[in-house]
Length: 423
Image (cartoon, rainbow, N blue to C red):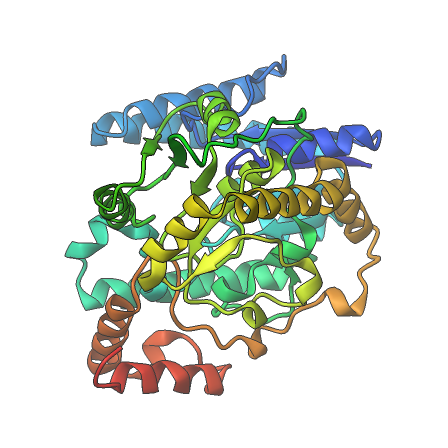
């Protein structure tokens, strides 16, 4: 069995998964066309096709501010994908795609199915979440019209329909899977693969400065301005806080800061109990403060919900203060998080679950029916903004614009929420 993975890296997920497959003696290759600046690993491949598409991805990313230049590099990359696809079809038995990527705008998926290849699609959140509850589009979305939300929601629904029709296995997260129709394997059950870290010496600094790390990939979407205000209010109360904020830096810089911090603040409006940054912190034994509207019963079975300090977004200051003043709790929570990820989410163990799914050995209790989803608040966005967007969409185009015709109960929850006097 040989496994192809691509074509977008998400916080080192596929880089680490490749290491997990290698630990099981399974040959795999990961091709990343995103050109991201985070450097989860330096590509050491000698394959000229892979080197070409990855190089073009970096050039495309670097030319992002220049539309015509970016278009030029994107065109060249699209042409290079043709021989890459032909080579991959000849070489690999299994294809794992992430973050709504494909070779040719999803036209390649039915071809892979026809050729009897096994296809797994992994959704990481924003790639499947309805746009009207997805704040990762901020700040550009502040200028979007209601018609734009309706159009991109329809487009995303169509994309998911194609993927669900042809993929053998779908992995997704229930609170961001409202547009799905077919049962999928929950993201947290599979786990987020990371390598084991060397033992990290805990910082006992209750009498000195508390070092808090925040590393937003998108500051607006992660609620960074509000997090800064929360830190300022606690400093004004007299707490000796050293607040470290990192954005757009190589992953090695983040790892170095994780080693030095007391705890991390992940984000303000999360729909997961432990996303990638909080997971990486957990491997260092550092607990995470995570603002969220979501309750635990929305994530799936309780046994695969990792430990973190989750709080309502309005209670962020109190949550940060708790981890500042209660050193014993802070240390215990960090150790609980570390024990959980080391027992369940190492690269080798996550890869083992993939191999089990590839062999079509999926226990029935692994599958989650999207008709059971009842979460309406989204991620990276306040519930007040969600209410405003949903209300406008229903007013302009009716409830059909939500693309939830197969889930009447969930659809009604959104309608009732949109009609509420106050969110």
